[in-house]
Image (cartoon, rainbow, N blue to C red; front, side):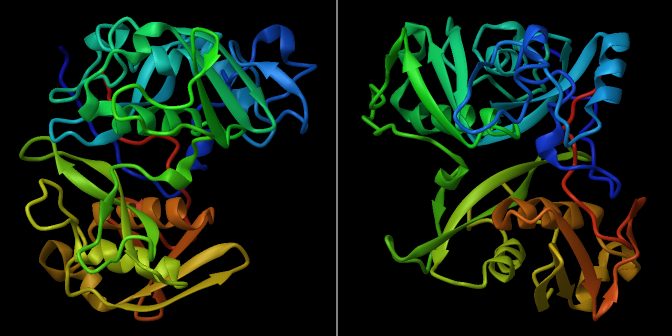
Length: 355
């Protein structure tokens, strides 16, 4: 097993994470002209090959991939604490991007030689993707019968991982699961009902201490797990909080509160930080924080990892593509080596592994 060499950090000049898998996309070369990556409503296309995304700089990326013979793909693995975590792996270039992603999430599969220490695959051993289609934004994945051979405690994790991995692709909004050519209406162990799965179902779900079931608002925040003494990685947690219409503000406040007591995760935001204001301006979320956010490194600057978790959490929960971070009404200039003087968007890779 290879150890993780580096957990990469967010930079301020990146595109959206949904662009991660462009270049070598979902559809085959024979379909590039007739079935673009953002297929028109009502069309149905196979998801076994490659294509390009006209909304991303995919042409340049595809050219680079052709030269390098490899590409970054986002897979979802289980960490040592049992959380489902996105990990960016450098994989061999393949004509079946979506199928490849799921293949690299199978126990005993090719991902075993690439796993960071403490991480394990989620899908049951022997699972194969028999077929995959996309229609009206829904990806239908047909798994082999081995997909049903898992422990009951892993049922929700499997659904979270498959849903998240597929919706990393811009044209996939929902996921439908089949097994051996037949739609799966419920999971076999805990009888979780299955319809269309999407990101609204959350990941690594938890109920806030003061929340009442049935009267909650979900927010997905990115806490951190510790890899070793010097390195950490980001973990998405969907927390059900008391109902609120101030979603963005709630996201920041939950990050400040941090993980629940006894959790192995942590937040890099100081718990004395205050949210002074949150507003949307022309599609950019402007977040104004108190000066406590600058108390990192002997009180000289903002914690880079805290700023990354903010951007990840806010774009995930609100759907807005850019975030402008302010401190006491003035733009945050930098955090570590990262430029925050202008609005920033989600990273193209997350928890990346280098060999």
